[in-house]
Image (cartoon, rainbow, N blue to C red; front, side, top):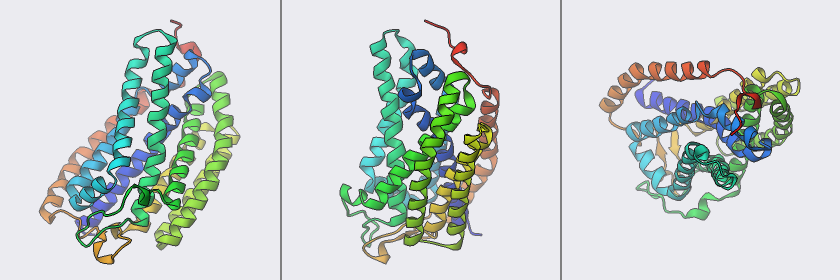
Length: 332
């Protein structure tokens, strides 16, 4: 296996990890006004992801850095052509992070409502726009022979991409509800578990439709197997949620999201950004890659530091593994 293929797989793994981990805290953020009936309950919801949300975003930073260094042509074309949606994602993530830090700084209800709204919007926009972006990456966009994006914003808002955005939104909402059922106690746990099952039915319908459409656009044997696995994992997770086996339910939704993202990358390879105008404009893992020497150096860096990062993040989840409830939140 050559280094370009290895780094394509590593980028795929990084984005897969990002969607699995950030997916549930996007879901928690969007469900804040739904499952949090008062300030103490909303503080419970926020505290379930408080120790981990910023660590989850490291996966995105690392994925972007890996793409920039390993596939600079891909990075340059993607970030210029998708400038507006990616800028909106960035602004949403900034607003969301600030909201987590500032919400508790003042006691006024109006102050907290404004930051709660920032958390909801800051979670909602990326949940939709990441689906839109990745659907367009797989479907292809207008690229000229110099690999320059020559389309407009409306080219990105095609029916397939919008279905992709609806699918990621529904999956993240379900994933977040399952996570809350796993991490909380009392009434919040009960409501989150019941909501996860209801949300999961819609997510399953959207996911099956989106993956079926995906395989009709670009397909491979590996992509088809992964898509079937994603559907089965989601159904298994929903069945576990129905009988209140929250750990298995969370495993099911996490595996479903991971396999769905893997399906997209498997269907995409060996391309990284197809052109809908001319095959000569298509970016592939080969013509978008850095020099072999650069990839070699990066591989050694990844081998040394990746286990350290994984160990630290695993330790964080282990330390903050216990459930919390309203009784753990002081009144003030």
